[in-house]
Image (tube, rainbow, N blue to C red; front, side, top):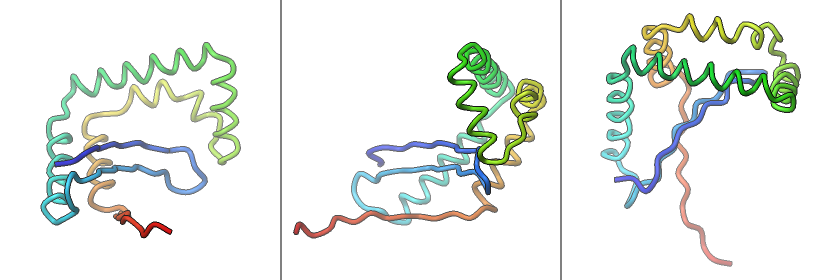
Length: 130
């Protein structure tokens, strides 16, 4: 059991982006807990289908419309991209690039993230009161 579980992705950076998966065990961290995290990942990726992918892409494209409608958000995003060396073409081509993403693309990168990339497990322990 977990008290909380979360994920986020930070793709705009000078180096590799970060995909973070975090979980707080209800009791203690053990091999069973870590195995359950792996199983949850594989279950989620295994259940991913075309309908879910298309719904997600539609939401991403809607978010793009809202971003372009807000000059402050658009300027922030463009500045963030420029300061990290990402070409403005990425923003200009975002819609077409999202539309091109296939279910196989997502599953391939999910396999890379989970099985072939550098992973770090951090364990926070209670300290002594001073």
